[in-house]
Length: 351
Image 1: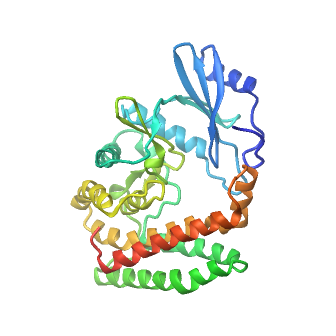
Image 2: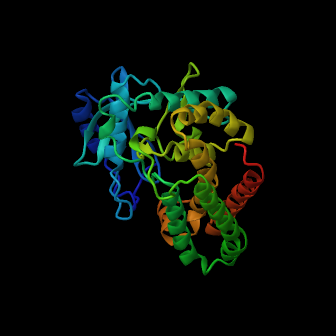
């Protein structure tokens, strides 16, 4: 249910939703109802006779100035013009009201993705790369939190770690985890990466050229997919879409907690994506090997965002049911599990 959420702003009335929907769809809206809310947006289902639409609101946030509406609408509009069928169609947008109208997707979340679903995700990401040279692709900006060099990925990790350490003082277990478990692994990962880059004669601060970059959904996984009645998958949430290093794009997809892929399915997905980039990008394999554990360390920190005061305040405003200590303990255990995976990957570097 969608009510008052100061972080998202006041919820629009259903009458406002109906009026906006009629203007954007140029149809008579016969029904309007909340369809859910995420941490950054609200979505309403609009019924217009024989058609249904999703009206998505993107309230501006002081702590996150990114243009999520513009990024997602441009992405889905571009993908629609390129005849990509596995995404919702972009219909119209109203930047003044911070909302956009999309095709409504009827489907069910993926409770337990199969090997076939992994193959569908790989096929979709491969299809995106076929669009890189088509007209309009250059109008797309960088992906959210893109890292076009190994040095940029390390800077992102260091920045997140500094912010988490500021909040760790009052959390003894978190402080111990950072000092005794996370930091030693981070030192090892960064040191090994620098050595490998130096041996290959590569500058860690050099950006991947545009010709070798990938179109990345960013922050993407099976949690952003629905299964249609015929079994086909549709992928949602392109608020952070843009250009990125393909090594980071693949690493993020493999590691995203929302997908929770087994090691065997990570290998299956990588084997369908990595070799294609390696053919035309001589340094891809090395960058991927270096970036995979760095990205995993970044995801450890993202999992621990619940320790940040502003993050918990958002959850409280949104009516989080679980108590703070329970949520933080759960996220700390997830970070430990991911850190254990990094240990294993360092010992056995094959993906």
